[in-house]
Each structure stands twice: as C-alpha cells, then as structure tokens.
Image (cartoon, rainbow, N blue to C red; front, side, top):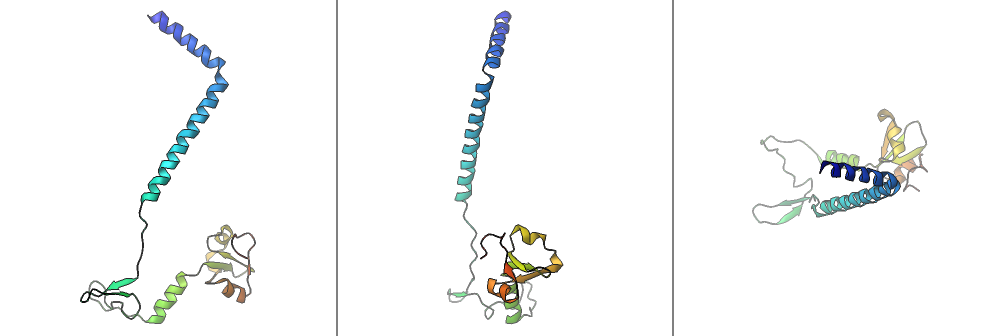
Length: 151
C-alpha cells in the first residue's frame, strides 16, 4: 500500500514537471475568474445599500404640514434650551464658503478643481478659493490644462 502511494506521488510529480506551463495558465485563468466573481458580488452589495438623503424640510408639529427649512423658521434654541445668536448673513456666508470648489495659488496664475492632483500641491496658506469659474477668471486666473473638466 505504501509503495503504491509513493509510486503515485512520483508519477504525479513527473506529470506536474512536464505540464508546468499549462498549470500556470490554468491557475491564472481560475484566479481571474474567482476575482471577477468576487468583484461582481461586491458591486451588487453596494448597489443594494440605500443612499443617504438629506431633506431640508421641517414639519409643523401642530398642522403636520411641511415647510422648506430656511433661516426664518430655524429653531433659535439648541437642545438644552440655550438661545443661539445668528443672523442670515452668517448662515449665507457659511453656505457659500462650503460651495467653493475652485482653488488657486496666490503665487500662481492657474485655478483648479479642489480635487485635482495639482491643487493638493498648493500650501494651505497660499490657497485662494472661488465658487465659480467666472469668479476665478475675474480675479485674473486661468483654467489649468492638467485638470480635467476645466475649459
């Protein structure tokens, strides 16, 4: 019995040595298929997740009617009942600051999208932010050629 197992092992190793290239090709094909299947399953899982949506709606507790959230109907107290001081210019400046998607360097002549690779090179203290391309061009900057999507 042991001699038969040893003989079988020798035959198997001989076959593997003689078919080495074909085994590598088969292994590559199988691994590619397994990886492709796994990525397909992973993408399907991500599709099933429901996206988070943010709605700017405040419901009136008495009437049950919904109104758009604006600075005029924002609660003026926080959860602890402490009065909050704010005005509409503070809120609008905070909103406009968050919408600035173009950046340029004080020392340069080009502007970029904030997510462009070249924009990451600009030091924080040298960054100038703009909300629109027109605003950046009015300030004397030109669109960068290496940032896709800019004219």
